[in-house]
Image (cartoon, rainbow, N blue to C red; front, side, top):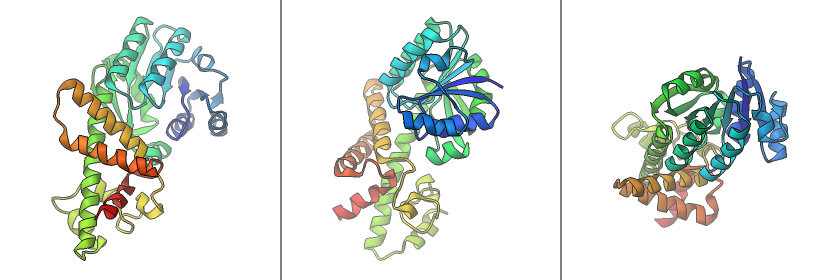
Length: 293
């Protein structure tokens, strides 16, 4: 079993670290928020007073942080304490440019590195069923795979440095666009007198089927486990969807890609957040379309 340092023990990082403990690994954790550190300690994570303390004797370091600037700051600190050949994995969702900079920093410190953002939300983090999209060398991926498998059910090596972040941004742009389309369709169905169940029964088994309908239906009833049945408690918060859509648009601008639907979805989620809905599940955006009609 490995000695792992886990930096960032929030809604995603905390459960992920707990699953590593369940798998038999020794996990030393650090978070700037003391309450989160206490929660992690209750699940078997050994608390550290500073990130560098957690990292000193770790074979593997995992970070789960809000933005690219936080990752780069943390890795600057981490890599000063990490021994050569330590594997450093970033599971945050950040911009591709920052991710590639982090890889360069790790290479300069003679450490292996992987960007491995996740899909599956807080439910997947708790259940250990996340999907990991990994970017980095074959050597880093091979070393990371058994660790990632303790936290997820699907591990995909997407390519070299930054490829995991690229895959995550593209995937979540699809998700944001598809949820907007599904919500519009259900609001239209309501106006036409069609029941939620009738539309679900048709669309979930025909050409309209997608994850946003079949697994995460934005209206109560058809999918009992969707946040719509729990007053849109996340789940995956609308503010996080907006963050990912903005990352997709930054990447589109930098690469010259045309993503008009991604841009429109980003604008809609920005409006939804501005109206005070950032902490609600992203599927609650259906209420924005009801208000507009």
